[in-house]
Image (tube, rainbow, N blue to C red; front, side):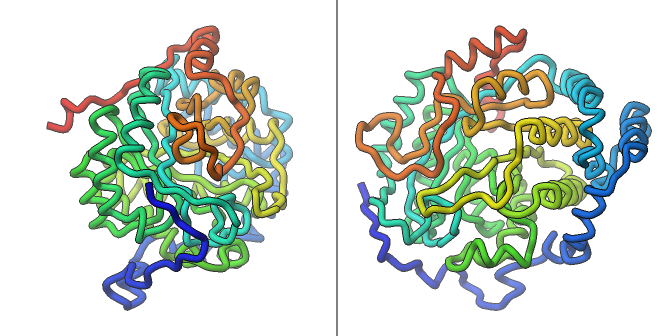
Length: 401
C-alpha cells in the first residue's frame, strides 16, 4: 500500500515536448470560443412555447436530428409545459434503440491522491485527509469482493489525477489485474496522450470517462486554480485524443452546479455532435452529475431540481437517440427507479467511492456521498419490477481475439 501526503508535488515531466501545440493539440478547444456563453444561455431562456412545439414536431417527424440549439429549446422553462410529451418521445426512442434493458456497472476507486486543487472536490490536494493508492494485491481483493456482490462485468476504474503515482505504467498493470475478473473495463483518470490511450487498449481498456467540469472558459480557472487540470484546452481536447486512439466508448459530462446548467448542456450537445462526426467509430455516453457540498466546504452555485434533471434527460434522448445515458448512485432510489423507463440506459449499483471500500473496513476519503445505498441485487430487482432486464455483461473477451 502506498501512502501519499498532501505535501507531495506533481512531477513537471508529465510532457516530453514543451511546445503548446504538442501539449494541447487540436480539437474542440479550437472551436468552443466561436460560441458565446451568454448568448447560448439567453437563447435557451427566451425560447417560446411555439419554439418548443416546433422542435417536438420535428422530432416526431424524424425528418432529421435536432441541432444543439434545438436541444436547448427542449430544456427551456417553457418546455416544462410539454414535459409529458417529451417523456413519451424519450421512452419510445429508448425502447427502439435499447429495448427494455438497463446495463449495470460498478466503479472501483483505486486512489484518492490528486495533484489538482479543484475547489468543489473532496479529492482536492489541500484537503487534510489520509490519501491512499491501492497496490495490485489490494486491487485484486477489491475485484474479488465485487464479484461476490453481483455478476458485474462492466467495471469503471476511478482514480484522482496524480500522474506520477497513477500514470500509464500503473494503470496498465491495474487493467491486467482487473481483466481476469471483468470483461469490460473503463477508466476515469487524468486526461492522457493519444499514444497512452492506445497503449492501454492493448491491456484491455474499452472505455474512457471524463468530465469537462464546466465548458465556461472564463469560469474554469476559478474552479481549477492549481494542478494540471487548470489547463482548459488540455482537458477539452482530451476527448479528441480518445477518438484518435480509437477508444471504443467515450463518456462525457459536465458538473451541474458550477455554472448555469443550461449553458453547460448546450455546450455538451455541441461537443457530442462534433465528436460523433469526427470519430464515428466510437460509441458515446453522457452523465449528468449534480454537485453536492464537498469536504472542502464548497456549496453548489446553482441547483438542478429533479424535474429539471428529468427534462434534461428527456431532451438529450430526443437529441441523440443512440447515446448511452447513465445515472450513478448520486441520485436517489425513487428517482432512478422512475427514470429507468424514460431514457436512462445504464446505472451503477452498490458503489463505494473510497479506495478499498469493497474489501476493507478501513475508512478513507470519499469523492462524493452515495445516495442510493441499495445493494446491486436490490437495484436489479427494482429494474425487473419495472418490466426491464438488468444486463450485467455486454462484452466478452472472445471479441478481443
